[in-house]
Image (tube, rainbow, N blue to C red; front, side, top):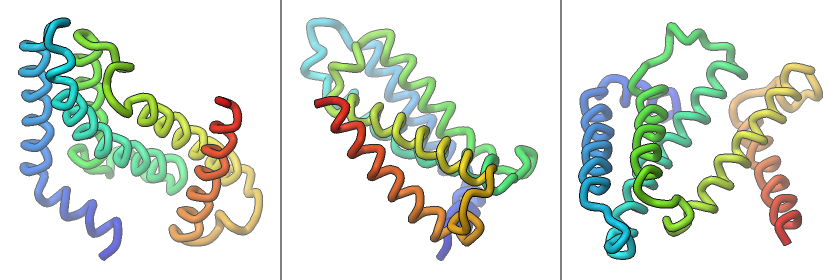
Length: 166
């Protein structure tokens, strides 16, 4: 099974994908309705669950979108909306709703999650620049070589970031 097969399966079962994100958005709305400064610490883990329930698929959709559009040159008219855009839209909606009621620094692990977003964006920027300048043979290969390059750059950026923060 390839990543393309998984994307196709998710596209074929888009009703399940839409249902998942609608439920997470409704859960976010419910949490924001009962969230008050006095009960933040009691609902902290429910908020964390919601953030991670949209952040993980949203991050994967962002990676998939950037790779497909910038690296592969896929047309936006050919991509599946429920796989490529719905996780990103639900991520933005949920984080916006929660940010109105709670400081994101109060969510356990959100600092690391936002750091991961920044690292992924930086690594994709570097890969995109290297790919567009035709720098080296590594990026003229297949998806496995690109993923290995991505992971190596991600580890290097994380190491550099940890040295900067100390």
